[in-house]
Structures are given as structure tokens and as C-alpha cells.
Length: 88
Image (cartoon, rainbow, N blue to C red; front, side, top):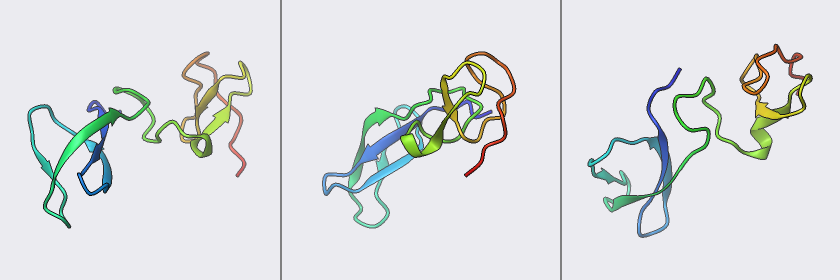
């Protein structure tokens, strides 16, 4: 289970990256050399059993409680029950 929070970073030229950032560390864009600034945290918040960000294309409905959960999870984070197999 990932314990570090993932953040969205953006350079002044508009390039973006999502990574597990550490406080008080400077991140630089490899291609432009510009310093990147944190623009937000990526959901789900750490620690979370899922590596997928909360986006429509990464979510499915729990077969028991109907709440949304990431596709890469087997057990629902809301009701704790095993979800039906995911069919793409």
C-alpha cells in the first residue's frame, strides 16, 4: 500500500507531472529545466490500496453498496465486501 501522497506539479510553460512528492524538495522539469510547483493533491489520498487516480475512466460501481471504487481494487473501500469481477 503506497504511503506517500501523490501530487500534480506544473512548470511555468504548462508541462505537468504526477508523482509522489516530498515536502521542501525542489522538482525540475527534465526537458525544459524549469522549476515545477505543486498545483494539487491527487485523489485518493495516501495511504490507499489503489494506485489509480480518481477519474471516470478508472472507477466502477460496487455490486453491493453501489458506491464508486477504483477498478484495481477487489474489495470495496466503503462496505468492505468483495466486488464482482471487473469486465472491461
